[in-house]
Amino acid sequence: MGKRYFTEAEVNELRENQYVKKVSKKSIKYTVEFKQLFWQKYTAGQSPNDILEELGFNLNILNRERIYGLTNNIKKQAKRLEGFADQRAINSGRPARTPKSIEERVRAQDLEIRKLNQKVEFLKKNIFLEEQYIRSQQQQKGGKKNISKSK
Image 1 (tube, rainbow, N blue to C red):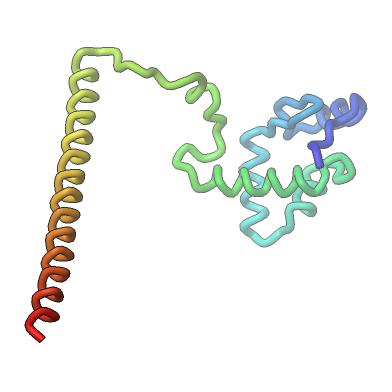
Image 2 (image 1 turned 120 degrees about the horizontal axis):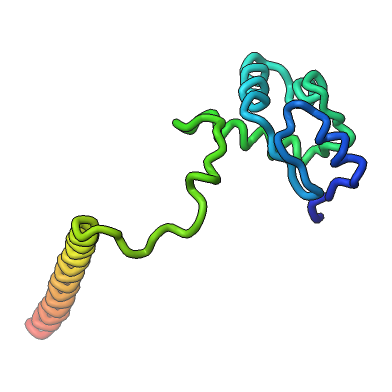
């Protein structure tokens, strides 16, 4: 089932709510104040539906999936160090692939070298253990043949 879009009338009704920062046909962006109030009431034991109604939202517009998503997002945000503040402006865009300064490049290359050295050591140990296992299997086969020949 696809996501239900808001009608123009629903968008207008949501836009009038003081706790809505931005609304489109697809999504709602809530204010930090709303998220804090919601979390306080939710942790006090109030249900999400009751909180939303109390804060002026029409539950006929917000369907069950949106309310569930809102509740989960607020739970996640409450656990973050940044809290309920919108992090999209700070964390926007693709992370830089190459470090900017020479010191950062050196640190990144040192880290890469350490990782590669760990991989090499792991592979060396793996090869050693595999060879050791093969030798032990060959010795067991050789030992069994000698036992059967002596009988």
